[in-house]
Image (cartoon, rainbow, N blue to C red):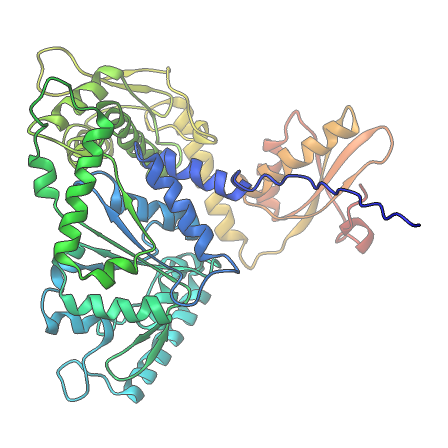
Length: 514
């Protein structure tokens, strides 16, 4: 008699529900830029995960609806999704439903049919696209940075394949975003157009061209029922209405308005309706600070090197802008206008005064912005030599009348003059020997002094040599004229020895020895 033993197998439980590293990173990015909408931000992460999944269904990459009161961040979230995916907040195709209220206007999405005004013959369209491609190729050769920002769109047919792919710019992420704003105002014909694209993954143009939209996410946003939500009052009773109860009631009003506007089969095709919460006071204060900090950051980036002084906006000034924004039922969109009115405009005026020498603020100074009780505007003050200068900003002074700036600007003019004279002149290779205490110090010296020669003196380092044993000497071989060698000697005075070599660096010298 034989017995059969059965062994019970137990596997390791997988943690399926925890987010991936990419989902965590995207969620943190969105929550840092879209305040007070954590649920919507998590939904946006799901949009990206589903759209790029190898298991995605047939049809388009996703069809979603963003719903909520005006000024709660619907458009801002779309911009931040595109910024995360493609590095550009405007890397999407924008369709304004308010401009597509009749059949003639709706034809701008798929093109005019044959024999109608605006119809473009396929041969002409092909030649036009070839000419645009040739111009873009030429622009990429001459100015790659500008070409990366430039996008070409066919205004007669917004949803062509070229427009959808071109909206991504230079991004390698195979996903396009079509954002339909003011969807409650658009013509019902567009509902039928979207239904076919969502179900089949193919968009039919008016000239029977079939456009693949399998890698396209459609997002509609509108103000369905917003007037009723804003004017809604809490029910009469003894119990105070909670935030959750108020949001649930607002969502029901919005859903009822969507059912009145769109047919049931259209709503049934939406993958997810994402509701945006009404922003609370703390959220609006955070948005105010975020908008102010964005202006300060933009100021640091656009100012010429050596002119961006430090700016500190005090809490009293932030609170003042917030209070001005909340007057007359303000929202997040009004915050941007108040930041422009009370802060950005004055900062622009200060920059203009510096250009015309009406004011004197240097890179080492600190400018503070605060609000005094009873005043209708902000107070600006400057504290000399209390700012934190950016990297490299200490090289140039704004005040042309200081001795330091006169010396620096004088040397800069000499360098530029010698650089112009060096074109076509006879050059030699000069050897700069810098003694060091150790091999680590020698490596650091190469990074520092090699960068100074290239960036400050604007001279080429043709090769270098590092000693393998003590004494640790770093040798830089710099090609320049006799006049430029004087600048080299002056720059390394006290740091190292400069001497001319009687030959070009050999192949052995051109190869790093450490």
